[in-house]
Amino acid sequence: MDRTELVPMLMPPPSSSSSWSTGQLLLLDAIFYHLQSVSAYCTMRCMSPVSQSVANTLKRALLVWASILYFGNPVTSSGVLGMVLVVLGVFLYNHMRRL
View: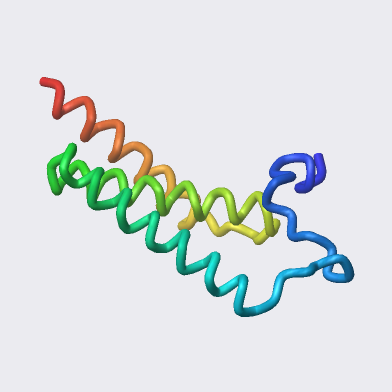
């Protein structure tokens, strides 16, 4: 399966038809960064700091996994072990929290 089939929305637009200027892209980036910050503060109101940290760790591991799929970078055995430990840790945290 080609990576364009996995994540078609992440594929960059063709450079010849790109009509976005650098200033427009920077403004769009600033808007998305602000929205991410606001959503992080809203999430902090609903979750404990430890739960927020666990969710952030899982988010980072999933981003690494997505970038591996998208860019096709090779993964070492220690990298796989690290990602498995992160996911296992999140599941264990959620299980222990419910006890």
